[in-house]
Each structure stands twice: as structure tokens, then as C-alpha cells.
Image (cartoon, rainbow, N blue to C red; front, side, top):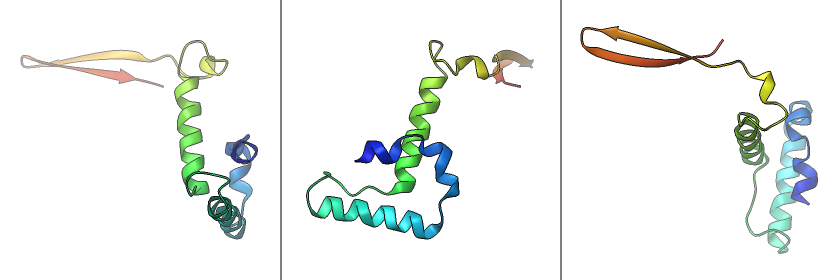
Length: 90
């Protein structure tokens, strides 16, 4: 059940009204009450976890979306015996 809601959630979540979000959250509460899921899930937290997981996978070199990210470059700054290394992404 949760998989069907999570499927492409990043694409359709922005089109939901607050009432839709409340309805889906109440669906999760009822599913927990009747034992279909093991914990109460909030739609906002589900979206955050899904986006974090997708971003982590996409930043790996073997993912199909990896080529869409800019190439990171290192910038080394030295100032009076101290060195700072920065990661530049444009």
C-alpha cells in the first residue's frame, strides 16, 4: 500500500491540497489502527525520506541520473599557515 503512494511522489506531491495530505495521513492512521502497517506514517516524512534516498542514489556514479549533476571541483585556499579545502559545484 505504501509503495503505491510513494511511486513518483516527488512529481505529484506539489499538486496536493492540504485536505488531500490530511486524507492520506488519516488513511495511514487507520492502516496502523487495523494492523496493516507497523507504525504511523506522515506523508511529509515519507516524502522527505523518499527524496533523500533518491538523491543519495543519484549522486552515485552508476545511477542513470548521475550525469545530470555538475562535476565537483576542489578549491584549495591557503592563508598564513592554514589550508582550507572547499568543494565547488556550479
